[in-house]
Image 1 (cartoon, rainbow, N blue to C red):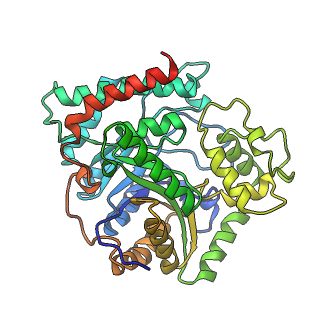
Image 2 (tube, rainbow, N blue to C red):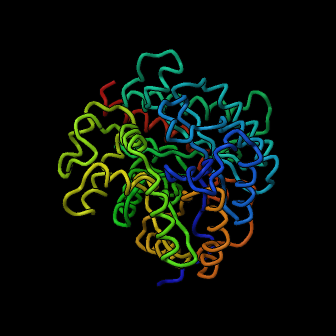
Length: 427
């Protein structure tokens, strides 16, 4: 394989209490009692920092969700948790999720500006539009705004945040070039337009190398179309890993995880992505009917296309149970179960195909998953010249390779983008 120059990929560690697999908390090594223990999250963060990860990534859904009999609930508020971690981990960056639907722009701008100043620029904002009905109910709403309307609201919200940062009314120390990084995960057509317009890092779910290359090429085309350099938008697909010292060991761990899945877990996971689990049984064949199961879902719409692609790759006689077990860890993201060398091989293939500028690593289980990656995969990546050794910059935007002049064009680009969006939706 071609040896790639060092420093070309950005690595983020997705921070989940027990790991990304739905059943990871049920492993003998799982520690579900530590769900509210800050020290547990700090130990995971320190492992990621030991491995030289650029940043920690923490998702959020803005709501308490039912069905936690078989699933670990989302724990701490991401901004508060990551602020504490950043104080105890002096080098790794932090990317916290915050909604454009359930926040005030001026208040959120001030929060991230404060974190940015306190961490010497190690902060990123993962911009989400919050599509779950539980989130709406938590804020006293009967329903969320429709999908495309949420993105139209997000346009105004992000512009207001950028304007607050530019003016820096509280003299926190921001400037056009010195501000938090913008991260986004839009995958629908309107979401991709939004990401190409504002994001410096785009997090995406793609199930295979071809899909990764197609997505990255599309984001770069959209950025170029509005006058932005495609190189200023870094695409980092999620990558679910099950690491073993041998391939057999890794496969045995994955089989153990899958064996601990319950029917309730499988159904809840499918429902989260808009699949109507009442129309088919878990063991009914659904090949060719998956799109029919989504109904009028207004949440994460793009994942059903990913699941369709996964189902197509599984051959005949695909059932919801088989599909759910396949995506129980990856949720449709890239994945690899194998040795450090095999995982590095997969990452290199994606890079060589033009499918990524980096990866958001999703560990199969914790404690242990991050350590396996840091001790096994990181040295292999460094041996191949695919990843740097040690931290070279405090600023998260500098680590992402953001153009220092990009901020000066934000208002012009955003205005152009807003006009394009208005024309597209006749508003």
